[in-house]
Image (cartoon, rainbow, N blue to C red; front, side):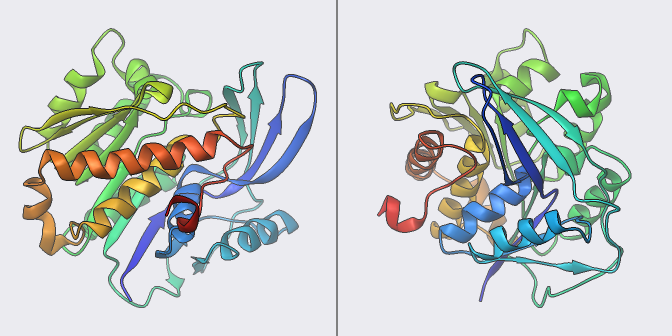
Length: 305
């Protein structure tokens, strides 16, 4: 069976709302992408960095319930990471973190070459794991489609000047990039997101998608297509996990279109605007369902079909 591999952090998300209520549940941007893929019916592995504590058991059970296989490594974290999301009165999240990030030197469970390998967010920047993630992605370029979502966390990553070289190196490696307008505003203040997306398509990616929250998404392809899709109007519970569910939908949509795998790289670079529009329209539906309910809770395929 064709599988996806997601490399990146899994953690415990603590959500503190403006009314003082508080919840805890598993999260982490790459883990949420894996979760979304599993719920859409894709076979997916997650290579991550967890402790041996009760929190790690909770995270694993959560992921495995959505058919995500968590790969077991030869080394473990001293503790399972925690991220606290503070929600304002409009449900918009700001974050603080208590975590360490690395990769195991070896792991069990990966039985075949993955069709697609995804990474992003903390995993691609925070050391010592960031350098190891870049190496792992680079060595898989000849065999798999590479996808990347910066999903930046300024509270953890320091200045934009520090994060930018990591982002640019991963953009050069990736075949598909999904990035938010907020990320681009932090990296390149005052520069139009569409301008940055177009520039990135000249550096290597076949497709760059910029999400604009409730305003939809913009896409640029290396073949020259430019298009925008609208976001469905929904009542927002919170925005936690919205971008991750969009990213999972993007991988899933390109998978259904037969555009994943290193042997399909040329076809991905030649993708037409109609195919991209259809994929992104479905991604927008997936993200809309996610924001309509609390937490990083992406839909299953039967909710879409």
